[in-house]
Amino acid sequence: MLRIAAAGVAALLVAASPLAHAQTTGVAAPDRLSASDVDQLTDARLKIVKATLQLTPDQQKLWPAVENAVRTNAKDRQARLASAADRVDRLSDRPIEESLRDRDPIAFLNRRADALAQRSANLKNLAAAWAPLYKTLSDDQKQRMGVLEMFVLRDLRNRVDDRVLQALDDDE
Image 1 (tube, rainbow, N blue to C red):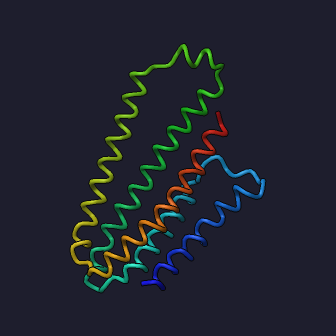
Image 2: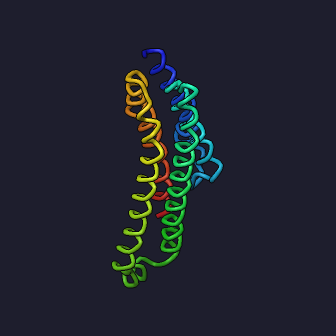
């Protein structure tokens, strides 16, 4: 168990070190993660999860559905962030008085509701994809998965989210 947790932490450090390096060297980081960056991060996360779980041959058959749901979730999330960033870019080119005068709180609420509905659908699809595999996991696999989610994947996701929000804040 300790070896697996150590491997997960090592993988996190390897995956997150370019992000941390870009933030601390004074070199300007790109405004947004590219589609290939998102794909690489998603690939790394999936490899970490799969290696940590050490799936049996029968469990391997259930993995493609999980992988597809994770990839769809990541792509949709990236599209939502890109859409929000584009709106910020458009608004940042306008004087603040004009932006305040022309704001439409109803349109904002509708955009937010649409984004939440899409996120909800993605999470339901993710849960539906994981359910058959999760039922076959041993107690040891479930414990490793919990440790991985708590200490590694959540931290990696939070670092990426922080970087994206920092880029959006820098644009304003």
